[in-house]
Amino acid sequence: MTKKIVWSDQIRTGHKYIDLQHQELIDLINELADSLESGVAVQEKIQVLGRLENYVIFHFNMEENLMANHRVNMEHAQKHMKAHERFCEQIEVYKRDLHAVDPQAIVDFLVTWLVEHIQKTDQELARLLAD
Image (cartoon, rainbow, N blue to C red; front, side, top):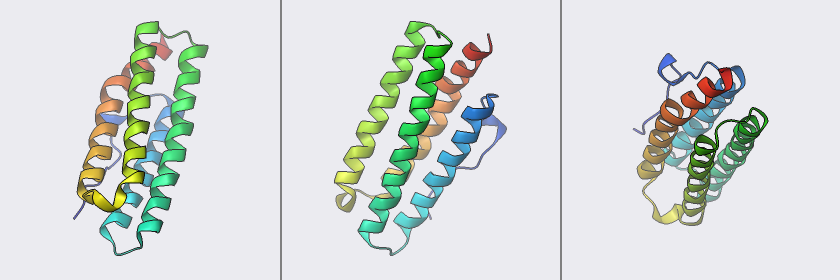
């Protein structure tokens, strides 16, 4: 059984739009976990991963626009954007090598990365935006 993410106060940032988009990301990660666990064709799994990737890009762009528009301190913004870049690079690796990667490793990466990123980087961003 693959690991799933459940929305909770522990990963709430308090920023309405960031939280709504995180909930959508959670739904997509859970959908991907289900598809990786099931017997669907690899192409369908790649399609779900592609949808997740597209939404991640949309979400990251929104966060980066918030940082620019609210003039979030440069140190946070650069660290935040670098984390986004590394995440997208890893998604590309998974898309390319999906057939050779343990599905559980993909889900574990996505779940761990998202929860840690929200609890550290995004919650800090929400505080900076509120100031």
